[in-house]
Image 1 (cartoon, rainbow, N blue to C red):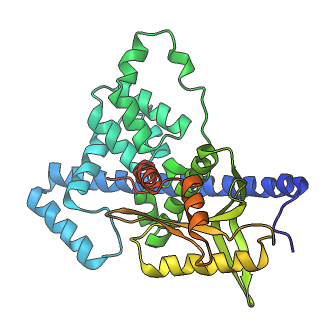
Image 2: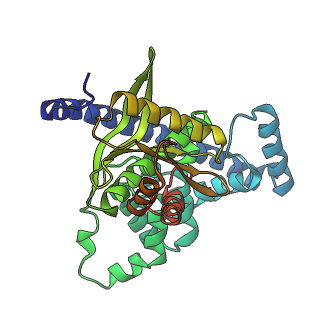
Length: 335
């Protein structure tokens, strides 16, 4: 059975994907609003206790330890973050214009705006900018660093800033939102993988005109089981399939073994008799280092191996690109 989709498939399935993405966006927004409301209520409680009940640094630290002991599954309640909740509440309480806006962006974005702006006008500017353009924390930080508010106040472009619309979900996939839902760590890793895979696909296609994209999550069958290759390309100069697997963990020898297993399946069931053996790349974006390794068929002649190395992306170049993409991926915002 062919893995290719017809144009009609793309159009019809694309509509379903749009429905799914709208539902995801609505869900993330709803959870984010509840999360910010919770921080607001806790900030209100702590603020009143400090003002009327004698709470101080020692009590808040004891409170933080209590939460960590009673509910270790709940994250984001260090003593410093509890004080931030109090500051958050006291910054916006009584401001009917800005209080609703803070619920439209992530907690890390709120902390950034709160710590880097001095006036309500500047806070409103960045709150609207972040929510209407669905900015990530890094994008918002870049705009603040460039003094966009100050530059806009003396320009004629003020009304144009809020016209752009980015429909991605990156900004809403804040680590606090995921932890509030008690979502397993592998969910965040999945989002990180998805972001890097999409960028690696574009990078390979831009690398040279000889690469043609075949498919993402490309299915191969071995026995009665289905397996999926992250990215599959065809190189017209080498006349071979090029499989790419991404791991968001440190490199392990079994990763290379898994890729070689996929290459055997490709050569047996997908490769045409006139084509050369398939080649694979394993990309590992670990916590401490990036690793790029090639998987080549043992049947390749030295001349063909040299030809492959000449026409495939350089390992050093790929390693640097992988490190760049890992740094740019904003799945795990810091508080």
